[in-house]
Image (cartoon, rainbow, N blue to C red; front, side, top):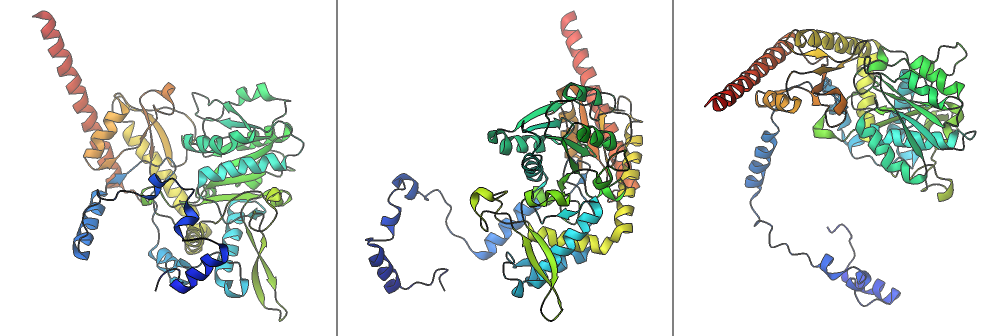
Length: 475
């Protein structure tokens, strides 16, 4: 059956009604060069068996290895039940729950997700959800500009310790909306926000301060003092968090040294650590939570719980500030859908692990990273770049070109980290490494031994090159 089941008679009647000669005439404004596409370069059709074999061969190219990269996408254990339930037809094929009488299951899942995220972040309200952590930060910035009506500057203080891609996406989305981003450098010894650098903005019109926790380097920021500074200067505090780390660290809703502090105003982050596989980069989902007083500036949707005429519990969409539902000029965002399937997986994942399970995973990640760093820094020439506490990532300086080292490690089946020279050339030959609960003692030992072998081999190559050069000079 065709996707559009119109008969030829139906089509002719519709064309006659609008006065068009043919369907093609409806698209005559499109340049013919864009419509008449040459497909002669496509290969000939082949059998299902051959296509299946080809796809298996392509999939095999994405071979496994020990992954220590991190930097925004993390390899965590996902209980088998998570995606067995998530991919049931009731969830897998469900669409936007506009009709509550037919969507109670989907609506309840979203409601439970919102409740869990509020508990994890210490915030009042959560939406469900955004596309990823980077776009969530951009939406958080837009939301802050709308919510902080005392500020007229649309001025956002963005630390360089925030993920480089997050900063780039936020600028791409917001800069053309007359929002100004001003950069705060990081302290070279601790890798955290340089609080002394904040002094230049003291007393000025600042709309919001972005506070990463942990930051891109894995370092733990002094979120209490940063939140206090933001509020003392009339700015909102936007937390950028790893949700798993919040099982150990103080939630954004409690940030601030003063007992009367309300904590962060807006919280965003990447939800991938909560039940989403790395999957070659996506799909993931973005987290966005806020204080109740800012809820009408929050993009996306909010599911609420109520009771029907018979007193039975029911779930409905209670806040939909999108242009599909209200006047475009009043809409907070043009987000047209959400990552509902990933939210479902996250809800099931958090339900299975529970608060203690999440804390155990986070604590294991932190301990495993400490062990990895200790093993790697025992190698001559390898050193930790920053002092202070970190979560499950750490920046290490190498005695050789970082990209060369990582390429050699990859050839041996170890994805050893991310080279930072592209983003932070001032750090030098540095990489950020990550260890999660999936890494065993044997994995850490394998990485350390392989890295030592690679560095030794590169040193010998350099020595031979130098000897050859001296021999040529002597000749």
